[in-house]
Length: 53
Image: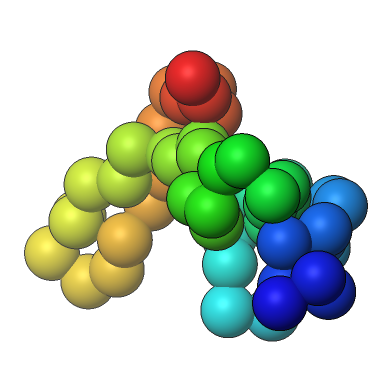
C-alpha cells in the first residue's frame, strides 16, 4: 500500500500524452486531469487544454 499511495508523475502508455498519475496517503484518486476529445467520424481528436482540479 505504501508504494501505491506514493506515486509521483507516473506516465503510462494507456494514458493520453501529457497525463500523469499521482497518489498520496490522503488522496487515492489516480487520475486528476483529463482532456476533452471529439469523434470526427473516423477517429478521436483532442481539443482544448488539459483540465485539472
